[in-house]
Image (spheres, rainbow, N blue to C red):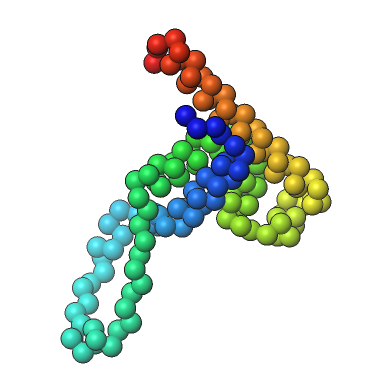
Length: 138
């Protein structure tokens, strides 16, 4: 298993935030079945703008997103989750200062504390896995 670093945690958070943008929106069941079918003529189809290619996340990316959102962020307090997730989405500090209503140094300290808390959680989790493998149990 590779060593866990804070920079790796930041990269994984940024990747998960990007992957969330690629996931399809959640819709209620039978959402589009009430729409009637529109039939276009070949001329109308020729003049229509082409739709951009939709990028779909791979299974590994979805797995990373689930690991970050459902496992890692559960360890943190709600304000720490919001702060880490918004920084992963590259929201500027200036806007975060207004939202969290504190100074730059205090917000940076909270951000660093949340990253360190996450780091030690993951480090402890990996150490637990190595102890189990050393004992031969699962």
